[in-house]
Amino acid sequence: MAKQKTFLCSACGASSTKWSGRCEACGEWNTISEEKPLSSGPASKSLGARRGHAVPLTDLSAEEAPPPRATAGMDELDRVLGGGLVSGSAILVGGDPGIGKSTLLLQAAAAFARQGLKTVYVSGEEASAQIRMRARRLGLADAPVRLAAETNLRDILTTLEAEKPQLVIIDSIQTMWADNVDSAPGSVTQVRATAHELTTFAKRNNVSVIMVGHVTKDGQIAGPRVVEHMVDTVLYFEGERGHQFRILRAVKNRFGPADEIGVFEMTGAGLAEVTNPSALFLSERGQPSAGSVVFAGIEGTRPVLVEFQALVAPSPLSQPRRTVVGWDGGRLAMILAVLEARCGIPFAGLDVYLNVAGGMKIGEPAADLAVAAALLSAREDAPLPADTVVFGEISLSGALRPTPQTENRLKEARKLGFTAAIAPAGGKTGSGGGLSLTRPTDLIGFVGEVFGAG
Image: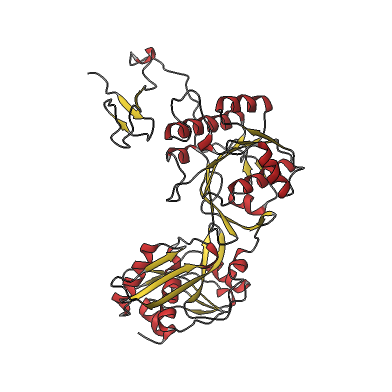
């Protein structure tokens, strides 16, 4: 029986079992070619033929030294990397255009170079003169960083093999071009091929490679998702143009905790580290106002306090607005439904606006109770005490579920001067961090105890 052939589209990566002139997935013409399997050579004709060298195997009890790390001296960056840069690792950094990716990596390159790492910065988007101008503006002109402006991957790899650096920064992966791939730079095939070559180069030569990736309008790194599987670490640089805060978030890290964050502030002299992000996010918080609630969250291993702001107003529309910034809009709809179904508090005919102050993005379910408190405070025009933090997960039945790392949340709140906390019953609080605790078991009890209604 003949072996089934596989055909791949060089534009979108879709596979099919037969060739056609036009890809059914993306609609491009003349982009489909046959994929040759690795086992199609002469050695595979007989079942017992050996195809390669035997791979050495070890057991789980084998002990190995932890991978060596190099620190940049930038605590926020080292924290996100899991304690420093691992030799031979491949790192992918994504972020919106103009958010400050090139600024961050130029500062990181200078920091690592000053620590003794031989560093090469390769740009496919800017000329070397433009990078030098940025370096002078940031006060990094004296850093021993080698520059290159090139997009041909073969020439870049040849140069790196001769220079033998310890750290390479590629800005960006979408501009790199491999001459053995018949496709335009930035296409799915080119991005996959260049990322594979750079990752392989990093592993074989024990060189750390940091690649910049553009993002789509959905906030995902452009190109095939397989690139994120190839690399060891995936970082996202987040922030809003109207805010000076920037968040470097690890969404994947083979050498450290995922979901760890580093906080930076964009200044005229570049990105400055924020050692106490909770204090910075709450620095502009004034007198208690309706709809304002402080949430004690956990980002990676770090407790972070942020402010949720809600506004509830009568709507002239038949379908009221539901606008969310920094939180999940689907989860807001769920909270509104639970408040109406379990507590009898309707939001029909009311516009609802929810915002996380400071440009922070919150994703953990522990923010449910803080959002519910902000919505009720705005609806009833009843401010919560300014010295109170709120956190807890809400189930569809209206029950409140305890959240992990309750003690760390309370300690951070106490450190910033808060004296009271509202958290679900059942979680481990230890001594409570010296705070006055309110421990409701369900949403009805929370509404009755905090807002005096049931």
